[in-house]
Structure formats: C-alpha cells, structure tokens
Length: 126
Image (cartoon, rainbow, N blue to C red; front, top):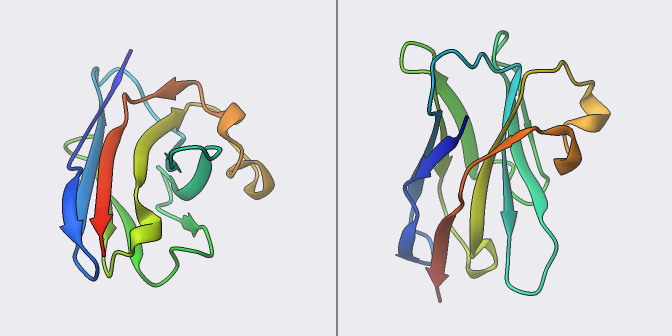
C-alpha cells in the first residue's frame, strides 16, 4: 500500500498551494490521515491531521489559521490547503495514514503512522 501525494511547487510569499494525498488502494480505510513536513537540516514535524470518520481536525500552532485540511470521502482523498505561505513553510511535505485509533496526544507523533507518501516539495520564495 502506498500513499500518493501531489501538489507541491514553487510559490511566492503570501501565495497558496493545495496538496493532495490518496491511498493507492481503496481497500485501505484510514482512521487518521495527517501531514508532516521536513525542512533541510531539521526534524520531521507535524502539520495537520484529520480523523477520517468524524472529520475532526488538528493543526500545529505554526499553521493555524493559514492551513486547512479536508477530505473527499468518495475519492478517498485528503487535501491540505495552504494559504498565506511563508518562507519558513518551505519543506518536503509527507502525508501519513494510520488505521488505528489515536488519542489526541499521539496524533502529533510520526511514529504512530504506518503508511507514508513519497513527499512533495513546497518552496516559498521571499
């Protein structure tokens, strides 16, 4: 099973991008889908997550009010709408999925997710 992520690119400060992520098979039913990012020389960090069944969302403080996570259940696809982008948002963005139920405190831990996408690069120029 793979996650297919897309939508990265080069954008100017203040611009926007929308990332997409979908499992390669519809047989995979997610419990939680999330986005993490990793900038050069830095550790991977949590960006946002959504509980698939309820649609409840969680965001890192650094992206609250600017990023929005959503899903299309018919397409089994998750989206990350990124607005008002800043140079510090530059990173490789990874989508992740777990079929296990997670409590809130573990949503932010990359080790809790079994499946990962290949990463899509977002570059924000100043």
